[in-house]
Each structure stands twice: as C-alpha cells, then as structure tokens.
Amino acid sequence: MDVLNYETRVLKKEEYNEWNNLVASSPQGTIFSESEWLSITSKQNKINCNIIGCFFENQLVGGCPLFYKKVAGLFNFISNTSGMMPYSGIIIDGILPNSVRKAEQKRSNILLSMAKYFKQLKCISLKIQNPPRLTDIRPFTWKGWKSAVRYTYMLDLPNINYSRDVTRNINKAVKNAISVEKSHDIDNYYALFQKTFERQELNVPVSKIYLQKLFEHILKSDVGDMWVAKTPHEEWIAAEIFLHDNNYIHRWTAATDPDLRKNGGYHLLLDTVFKNYQNRCISSTVNLMAANTPQLAEFITGFNPYLVPYYSLTRPTIYS
Image (cartoon, rainbow, N blue to C red; front, side, top):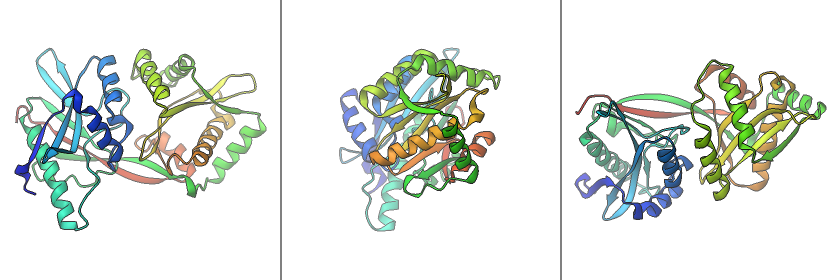
C-alpha cells in the first residue's frame, strides 16, 4: 500500500452520499462533517466549501472539509471549521488491519496523501481542527506542520457519578419547582443566546438565520433536540441544543440567564437530558465540550467527566 496508490481530490456533489457514509462509519466522524451541515454553513456564512476526499483503488478512505475565506479578494485563509463547528477535521475509514504496522502504514498513507494535496493549495494560512479520535497526526508534524492541543470533556452515561455540589443543585431545582422540557422556540433561544454573550461583553458568534437554518436541519433529520429549564412562571433559566451522531451525543450550544442560573435549573436540565439519552440508548458517551474556558470547565467538572485531548494542525507559510 504505497502512498503513490492514494489519490486526494475535491469530491463531486454526486459523491456526497459516499462521504456521508464514511462520516457515519469512521471513528472520527461527527455531525459537523456531514455534507448538509457543511452546505448550510457555507451558504449562510457566505463562505466557499469543498470536501476533500482521499481514495485508494477508487474507494473513499478518508477526507476533510475545507472552507475558503478571502481577505480583500486576494489572500485565502483556509480552515476546516466555520460558524458553530468545534471541529470537523480529517476522518479515516475505520476498517484498519489488525497488524499495528499495517494499520499505521494505511493511516499514514492517507494522511500523507492529504498533506501533499494541502501543500499545493495557495493560501496565507491553513488550519485543520481535528476531532477527538484522530490521535496520530505525526505524518503532518514530520512534514513540518505545527500542532496544538485542545481539550474536551466526555461523560459515559452508564457511569454517572455527580459531585455533591451538582446533586445539591439538582435537589434545589426540584424543590423550587423548576421544570425541564423540549422546545422548538429558536427565537426565544437566540434572545437568551445573545444575552449570554452580551453579559461577557462579547459579540454573538453567529447570526440568527444561521442558527435557525441549522436547527431546522436538526429537527428535520432527527439528530438533536433543544431542552429548556423554566421557572414556575415560565421564565427561561437555561437552554441547550444537543446533537447526536454515531459516535457521540454533543452539547452543541448553550445559553443561560445570569439572574436565574443560581437556582439549580441548569444542573437539573443536564441531569434530565443525560437520563433521557440513557433511556433512549442513542449513544453511551456525551461530548460535554467546555474544557478550554476556565469558568466553563469549573462548572462542568462537577459532573465528574474525563478529559480528552484533540489536535489542530497549522501550515502558516504563504504559498509553500
């Protein structure tokens, strides 16, 4: 399996079903790499997107989405994420030989073929934010790419073991008659989402229409739900949109009311959702995210998750 036998190129639209099948079967595949998610992000953010595929003997064995952002109509900044995507990154066919040497050779050939393709791209910067299960990025770093590590928290639903503080807050919310339910009210969600960022003096990262379009896709495809914690007076305390794919349940986006969040409603919301997914047997692992911001990490560690690294790759040289 020499690397010369691998071909990396832009996928045609008619090959997107094959791509989605690879995303669904790959250990690195997430909803953020699916073609419809990429299409909505590209259209709503007015940014071009290609899906790059790596082939071996005419079979798609790997790939990576790329978004192309031009500055002043001249320089390209290329990244595999845009909008509300924590990563998409490089995914690889999950069928690997049992032999460690052969498995590493196959994985290395896919990555080297893709690195060769990326090298030909004319851009000022190229950054790839990879998903958690792509742990071997050596074929890139050996070629001079810079790497950086980021983190996410994972929670195994069969092994829930909350801290005393979380349990106390859940009990407080029950005592305060806080309710948790599903909702389709994306308008109210976005208003709370704006409030969450404004209190931190930050710009809202995405437009309302972008969030609406993605939420429509989520509901239509049955790949997620919005959950809301409310006071007895129907005030929104907190809301989150959860997603699920073949590998994980994702805490995708969250919003809270700063004046109401101390009544335990947020803790009750997460506990309710975790138990709901347990009963539905959709996935056993929740990707909690929240590990790269100190205050978010402090909150989420009360649920006793475990820390998982994931890696980004950067090729910063202009036209190298």
